[in-house]
Length: 83
Image 1 (tube, rainbow, N blue to C red):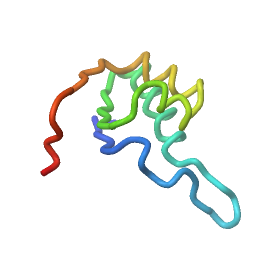
Image 2: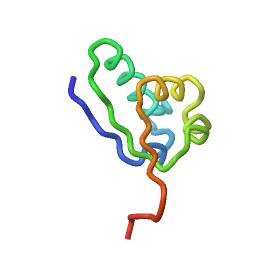
Image 3: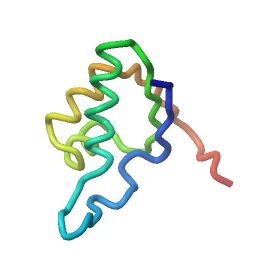
Image 4: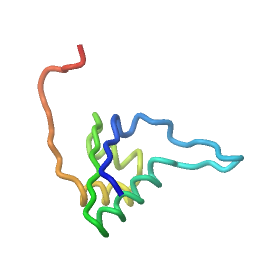
């Protein structure tokens, strides 16, 4: 497994249809990356504008706890750099 970066975590469509079955793809990816991190230490990087409380409301307690466990948070405050 390789390190990956997920940009704008929380802005993706919540579910997708897979032949009539609703899937929450990013939640499944986050769970898989957590297991990879536990077993081999391979990193996953996230970029998001959401707070931990917002991540919890989007993904639920289960995924939020894993994100907290496997991440070092670097918070950037100040003027937006988007323009």
